[in-house]
Image 1 (cartoon, rainbow over the protein chains, first blue to last red):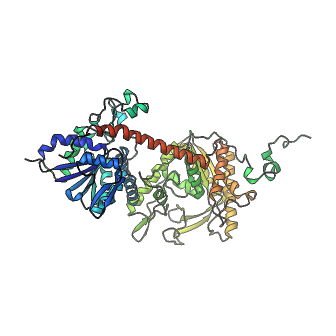
Image 2: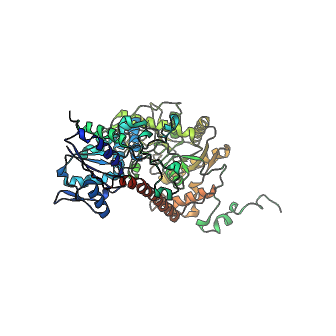
Image 3: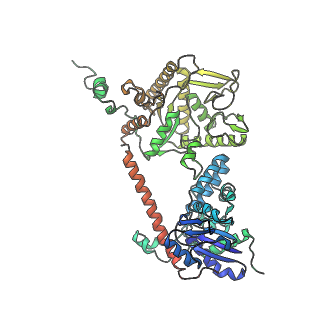
Length: 253
Length: 361
């Protein structure tokens, strides 16, 4: 199974996990195409050669560096594509809210309209039509992780403010309304990674050792150094195993 | 000679308050009875004109109570299509005080909403909100669930709102003979079928309007003892009348009753105030300038003029279009800068840890 990964910094936890796991999966290859931030809008379809190119030179260089290729993406070389990150961390909570609203009694057509709008407002939506111009490859999306809650939080602090909330239902709805018609699927963040409905367990957070220069410049202090948006390889392993399970990929006996 | 008029302010005299002024310079049209400001939560209900009130409050960053939020992520166009954010909950237009009484009675569990529905071409319509969804509902159950959501949200809004703004719109109404309940629109207009044996027209009298309004205010105050009520009368004339009179005459009769009820109620109750949006649009002083060519709908600058008077009354300077645009741009830049900083700060550094490492395994 050849897997094409297109993503941003949220691919790092997957990459780290894969380095420890790959020997158990001799028939599986993961090729990472990544750069930071939201850059999916830079991809263009080269319909003649059936490949994706990227307009920005810096992004191209990062893609070359991370994939070891020439900066383009040829889907004929892959069996599936995983899109990772670029939604921003609030987006999955919005999916969960939508699921809760559907359960609470909002009409099906209102939920359908909102699901389409919610997808359209997320950055990864821009790459789907571009991919479909050159390939029918199955595309799976892994959204940004839910924010890890600050260490020491418990009980009432973990309760979310949303009146309606149902993450599994929200993901199911998004798949039914948006992703399935695109030949795609949004893959849930696994249940075991949650501390509460709305938070990733803090033990999975990267927890960077010091504020970055840009953070210092912006007034961040030592107490604010933890990165609660990016997860570690333990999280990456759970996410990857769960994705493999969905794809029917099993370790070699 | 001494008399009570000698020391009155200029607004008390037609010449100094009106005739000597350009119409747009007329000021002091309303002095609120109680303090109002951004710290309070406002809920808005009533006829079409009430929508402008809610939108203006939200635009001026007052705490406009959105008691039944749109599904998360829904675009502005779809919110409009599905009637979200028009009123504080999705009751749709509440034209009469008796219809308001009906909704409030349901919301406070005094009465139950009848489980009636209208069906057309396999879609189901709520007789109390026939246009709330663009193509009706998929099933009766869905329609009833949606209505229940609105009823529950209204109850919550009543219990947690500081200022309940209600715009009185009509006196002409339609009732169900058997059930005794009121329809917001004549059956057979937006949906449903009209049956003259089942559906009864009522041109509401002053007493009927006042009695219902007093009942509503009593219910609101019982559920939320500190709630204040702000009444306005819609300046928009009737679209049509079933009274047998000319629509212009029927409009005048209807608005006169509503205006008189609002005046009496506000005079009798310290927690009820009246804001003169009706006069601001309709007074001959303004020469009909705020109406669209059909002489019925109000132009946006008329709405803005009304709301400027409202905000001036409570001591809030309305944000100009230029200022609003500036705030919007500044906010967008701030969000973008913050996101960019996050991207640069976190993502580049994390990716940097992988610099030079082969990624294909």
